[in-house]
Image (cartoon, rainbow, N blue to C red):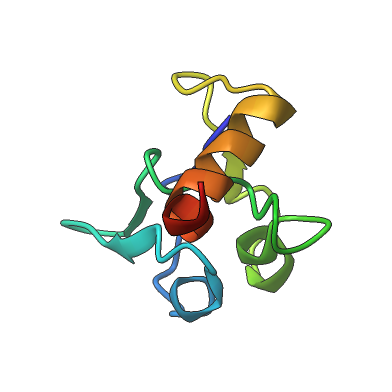
Amino acid sequence: MALLITKKCINCDMCEPECPNEAISMGDHIYEINSDKCTECVGHYETPTCQKVCPIPNTIVKDPAHVETEEQLWDKFVLMHHADKI
């Protein structure tokens, strides 16, 4: 399941540089997460780094519109970072 940045976002710039998949970018008003690139940090870290560094609790949450299994997140990670070795 990809993550979602809610309207609680204060644009503190903490999450964007921490995303190992470059899935976070500035939207019209707040940061947004590209669900095609978000793996919830599977393949990189134990927990999503964006959630760890966000100073506002419950601002970055699971996106119910993009439900994915752990296996699907791993597959996405492999395709993004190791496609040349497949």
